[in-house]
Length: 424
Image (cartoon, rainbow, N blue to C red):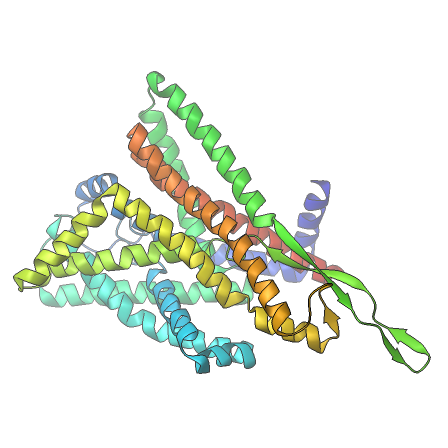
């Protein structure tokens, strides 16, 4: 604890780190100010009723960083950009040329793929804005407006999402931590005073056992997320001895750390994005299409995903799949084995080359299963609590808690890495 406080103190004494932290805080304040600017014509009473009665909008409010709670100009949050990033990463897995672009060209290749994500996020933002506005009009939250006013609102909302994407990238480049995750984190934290106030107003003495159980589960979730995030499998690595002249180089032994959950909070964000975007499209089709078959299919899809058990099962499966997917994108056993071979290193008892690649791949597959199942269980645990306790706030609080803990851990690691670099 003393070591941690000493590093935090050093971070604020260092001018460069202090500027990075200050820049990050400034951008988050700007985001919260934009989140208070509503689009015109919002029925506040109907909006509050819709958010409290709909699980879909409750999750979406988290995903937008709290921007949906008052239908602000940033109501879409960073959702379109995250969905675009998922599409690009899927295409990267499918097309070897793009995969080589990322691995061989390094930072330049990643910048090109990020640019593609930005381009795709704009049409996705337009589609999402049209879907939201149509749905909210059908629910009575927004009044029926002219076509020109509707188009203007779509432009404003899409521009707000694009601006938020840009601010998130500024935080990643000039601030500290992952900008997109921090924006979602800021939206969740900003809703805590309102949640505490609602808890005080709705407090019932008869529900004290339920509250105690909820607190215990929260503590277990926090401890579990910290443990799984920090857990790693150490693979021993030995460097071969090399004789150059009269000197002997190498022969040292070290280890290769393989994290139990290398994906962090990304699978949760990806899973929410994939779950929410099809529902936006189905809501849009059910209200706008004149074809009865398409409208019926879209309505059936919406009703299906309003079922809590179907939603929970899909959520669990997507979290597990995206944990494996993101781990496969970020960790390449073939590249690791080639790097070890080029540097004259080997894993004791394992032949270099293909055997090392298979060995590392098998280890990553096994340990990722544990991390993926843990994330999936934690993600749907609040939904199960909601089913048994009839408390709608628990489902949303669980997902928010998972994101908050993971983002805080990632932020602390980034600060620690920056401090360590400054010390050297």
